[in-house]
Length: 185
Image (tube, rainbow, N blue to C red; front, side, top):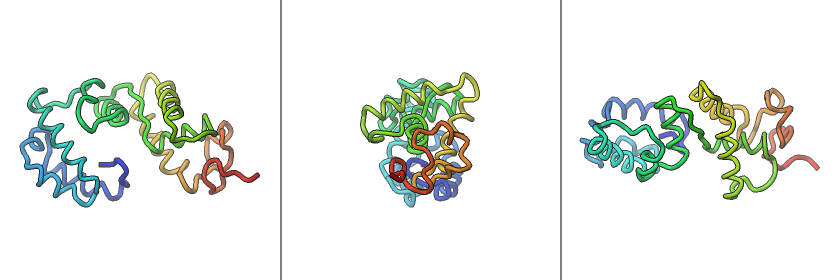
């Protein structure tokens, strides 16, 4: 639900969704149009369809339990590297890297600072950075903190560079409200 959707919009829908579908078995047994109806205001209506299909497959093939290995998770339609990493890290407490928009922005600004952050080569580099920075323990806290840091301090439009604890190593330097890469000349 949080993919490209703000937390404040998701929380009420998330609560409603979990009340109606507290288990994968309950979700799998639902009619897909009912699942879409609850999800509706969040947009990206392919996501509830895919989530429903994942629930059905999990019930049919894995006894109603979501698999906890990356290869199996990524075999589900709609689960890519980021979602698999997030599920492994947040749901199973496993050591798994994530690279959502906020994390990618932090990694790019702090460790790279030049080039097109949307390029495939740079994206692969950012994934390697994310994997290499993972601590041995407390991965959930690290990943959540990195996501929150990108959402609240190292923001896309008005980053808070002055109080930033990473400012002294940041490759983009103080941005003072300008987008990364648009520093004064």
